[in-house]
Length: 214
Image (cartoon, rainbow, N blue to C red; front, top):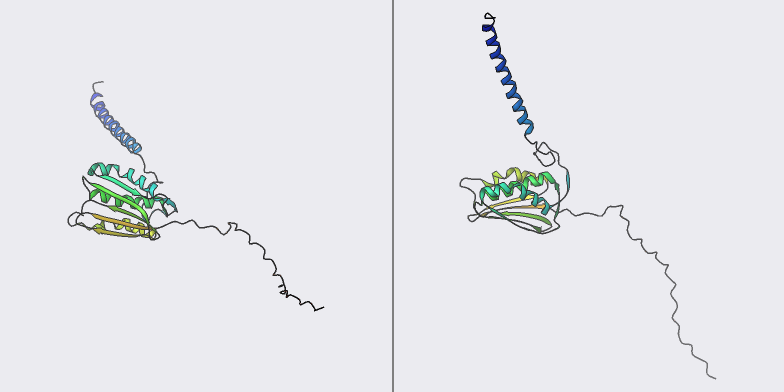
């Protein structure tokens, strides 16, 4: 038995190391499984996900964006003020529009520490205009348009235009999207035209007849 002890000890040590490695691998796999996966319905990546356009309510889309940037607002100690007209519809990919609007609002919060960000949505010249007004100017050496180029590309794919106006007292980021107007389909029945009555022959004018003298 004494002769086997020198052989048993290295075997036990090797087994302990292998068991520890297996436990670490299982723990790592468990943590990987525990991480929530991104919902494919709520994510967007330019060039990898095809557009699926549909009528999108702008006010509802902005409400979702505000929920997404709640942590950013808390981090910068900023407030978001909203002035949006109701019943504003655009034809867009819901995920792409939400992604691009989130970029604008996040940038506005970054430029407005301990201040307010005003987000407006209204009709303007046959388009839907969404504006973000930051309370502070861009950071020194920052190219605001270059920082927003990805969002501008997404808006352009929707036929929209974006304007960036950096100012000393704040920055304005403005997007104008084509408004969605529902058109009547060709199958929609139209009112039947009333039948045209044939023209009646003109009645000759009656002239008074002169009575003969008696």
